Image 1 (cartoon, rainbow, N blue to C red):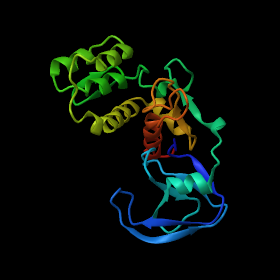
Image 2: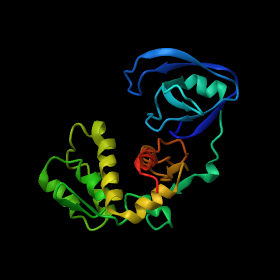
Image 3: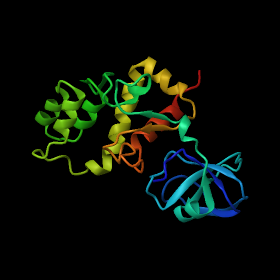
Length: 230
């Protein structure tokens, strides 16, 4: 899996397409040459499974958006990310970065409703039936909320696969807006790669083999990029 925010270097000169925007429907306006040995970063707004990946070449001054194919990346580029400097988090008990877990006890209010954890909010948004939503919201622990959200006896909203990333984004925005201490900790991570080290989740984390998509880590890095420097 190709994780957003990892860094690479070209092993030979490459021709890549330049676009006038970052959206999937953006129009290619030119081609650009990356010299052998050029460094670049995988942009944060990529889908880890996409065939075309937006990249951020080092020291680029043209203001364009560049994309490289997965084949080019695999054949003609070398991964240069030092994963020993990455921040791995999973359980809320881990210090100091366990606060990045959705199970951490950092509650927040949203649209007049209080949620004890980000997990309570995320799981409750799976349901349109208010009785089901309230049952999740009132769950005693984040694990209880997660278990209720995963029950097979209650139908979840039909568009859940389409909206769940934005639901998680809202949860993180509200959580970190509410608690200055963890917001400062997130800011302090600078440009380090954030990885949700769940062995059980290949979507939000990297899974047991390390090949998962790490969407939670990516959302946290996207949020970090919006925080003002102090």
